[in-house]
Amino acid sequence: MTGRHDDETACWCALNRIFGFEPKAGHALVEQAGSASGVFGMDEEQLGEILGPFSRFRSGIREEAVRQSKEELLRLEASGCRFLAFSDSAYPSLLKECEDPPMGLYYRGVSEPGEIFGNPVSISMVGTRDISPYGEEWCRRIVYALARSGARPTVVSGLALGTDICVHRAALDAGLPTIAVMATGIDGVYPYRHIADARRIASAPGCALVTDYPPGTVPVKINFLRRNRIIAGMSMATLLTESRVKGGGMMTANLAFSYGREVYALPGRIDDTRSQGCNMLIHNHIAEPISDLEEFGRDIGVQLGGRRDRSPAQRVRLTFGDKLSTEKQDKMISLLEKIRQNRGMMPEELSTVCGTGIGETTELCCLMEAEGLVSSDLLRRYSYRSESM
Image (cartoon, rainbow, N blue to C red; front, side, top):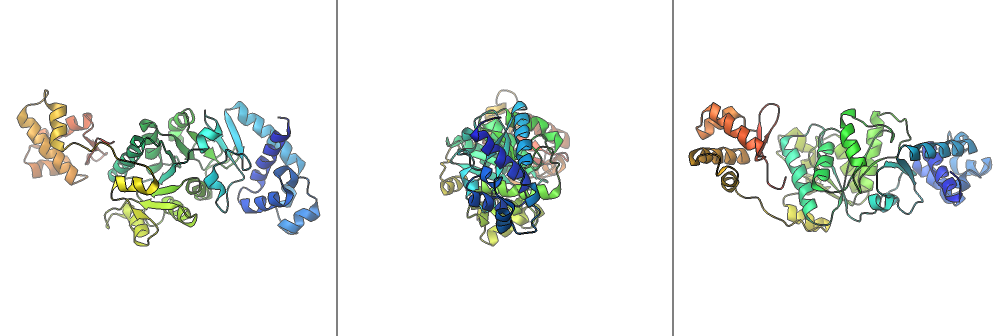
């Protein structure tokens, strides 16, 4: 790489490696020097005035670091990745407003950085890895409502198990751009089981895998906690769907609140540990409860009005009108209404409350699941699937 712009980018890349865990110090140096390249022209006395005489960072500010970064940028480009410096006009504007923004971002995607990071409407959705059917349903419903709005907001999450991957998949299925902020280097994916999802994100227009960690960085606990500031920082609003009192999702929501961003939480049962974090944020006036999708849309400036779900009876008649007898449809409607009212019911419970035999109950539930009216988990607990999913 040659040229002034590339030299400046390489200097930002080098500073990102040096000050990755303390970007404030790096930004202070750039401000004093006037540019990232200017930092590498400062003498020991100038560095000492800003960093202090015993700073561990001083030894890293060498021309060798810039040379290594230039080589790294070439390797990144060859592998389809790029580095976006803090000084680049395409760097996420909301992230720049935070007190500790990364000095640069590594990203993998097929679109130009302005298309990926320039969307004026960006919403982060986070939550527990141990997601429940309730959480899955509402992740999809919210994402699909956003997709119907016409605003095409960018949906940001962390590629982790549970809520994160549910959000990314829903966004891709709904045709929304999504950004996955990773806790590893751009050359890795964690957990590895999400490699197919990561490839799908990296190859979709407007989408990207993003991290501030240099290539070769492995997933350790502190990385996940630190990357949450990027998820919160690059989003105008953060939505917590499910979380225990302690967890990464709670940290992201609190960070968003500290950045002065809007925070929303999906309320849940008070005896459900996966909802206690959300309920706490609402109680402490940190998050606004999501009780109505249209109201949530108005709050974030997106019109979420759209078609409303048909009733269970209408859905059954339309789906099975020419396939099942009226008697079987009536039984199916009764089952579907019970599932809608009581999430997580098992076939044995449904059989008892609806008065149908266990064999017939199982058969009808399987038919409804095949047509997307209900879903079930490994324990065969059924949940209602709305048409907006």
